[in-house]
Image 1: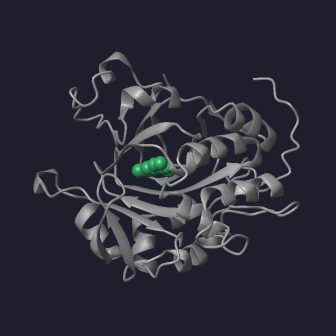
Image 2: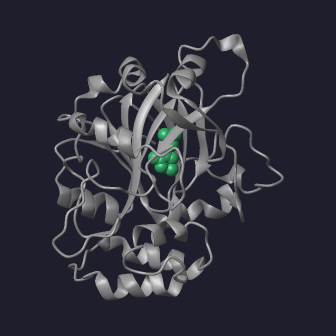
Length: 309
Ligand SMILES: O=C(O)CCC(=O)C(=O)O
Ligand SMILES: [Fe+2]
């Protein structure tokens, strides 16, 4: 099935019909007020070619740090016969208290050329945490896993789901991406405890139930579109052509239960480190999971209207 495509989407409708309803959506006019011409290989090369960037494999394992120009030279307009392993440049803004090749300065320079998408709530967020009345725009603020993704044709992000049941917004600036999406209730078919099935090379011994299911959605994200991967959804993304995207994660107050469920189920999960980082001036750096939850319980308003699903 194809993902629902919409335009002229209000923040309220996005919240109720897609975030709270936990349903993927593609917004086709999502970047109507962006300057997409600035998100081309030539522009990025001329502005940031000498910067050091994070190069990963087809999941999120760091392989090397290279200059952006080197990455582009090796991976864009690449000859099919060249046979080298595919590499994926995921250049994140700071999300841990470690010195690293973060992209915060680059995002600062890109700021004039894009905007907080017009349909995406920027208040009442749990992650990144917004105090009552506060707004946080993606172009001005740090969000978890906010990254510039530059990836040559054929490179891939294998099936996974995003940390602490957050939503992901994937904004496609340049090139096209093929996507497969699986509903969270297919966890026992696509996972065997810790590992995710590799859709392109299925190990039926490890994932015996995978043959019984199909992807809920299969679609190609086009330049100018933004897709929502809602909380808990499994997704696999392959570049149909050389590609430039931006992505980030967030959670709205009305989805707090998803986060609580995650914290209760996985109180020792590494991903909670990211929540601690985003709350570092509110709770201690080593706060246990119970304290993270207690912080949200006492600080989020949680006074939303009842929504009939
Ligand atoms: O674009 C990709 O390769 C993966 C994107 C993704 O997993 C995300 O935005 O959460
Ligand atoms: Fe993801």
